[in-house]
Image (tube, rainbow, N blue to C red; front, side, top):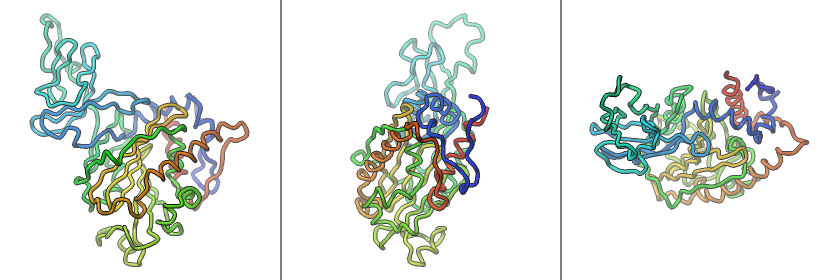
Length: 369
């Protein structure tokens, strides 16, 4: 695309929001596919997906947007790998179902690969010159873990550690690796809106008193705050009462708040561009935002539980209701930004710092040649 026809002023007091066209024009959607999503870290699974040596687990990276076939494997030395799931012979998917296998074998013509992606063998290739070569190995994909959550990137613009550093600083004392996915509390939602509108809504607590009556009762709106980092940001929810809150250790940056009688009910982390990790005393609620079209988004809502005793209480309760309230208002915004009479809005300097931060990051990625 040519140079951006708009900018986001670095000073939130002067800045205007993203133009309406960004939320609906297929050209902007296509630009984000490679410039934003192709270069960012995406949540694909957890370490349980390939738990034992010999395991192979196929995944699709951002189905509906990138549609990249990948496979997670664990070799006999108990090392985890993320590989292209496309056979280097004729492009067939190598692994179509999760299984424990002695090797990866393409069912089309029998090409075999080790769990680390190395080419092993291929029938009927006697006489082929310069074969095999490194090009016959399955390409390795950059990946990493935070707790038990696995993130991958086709062409990362920055290290995963820079994305997760603030979560390490804030909540690494929690039993992150003990969290277990609860399928009964996990589901997908289809939102009839652009993915970035869903993120905009998440990134500000401004709407809580107007949209989420239940959540507003659990949180002290006056104490709600946003902290900005390089590739992420954090909204800190202080409880309106003293129940269902974290018992913070002295090493926590928020320990002084706790001593002052202000107890933390939830940490709401946003990871650029489209992953939300909501940390409660019971575990982690994840919103993985997956674009499907300029005006369609699938949100995978995943619940990882480590303390069931705190479920359905406090700020981490009634999350399905909160999600549906968010969907309704975001879909209303999508209809509104199609108006010929709306172009751009302004930010609340006190409540929309996270939205401004997100838009500035998008501008940076979309400006790259």
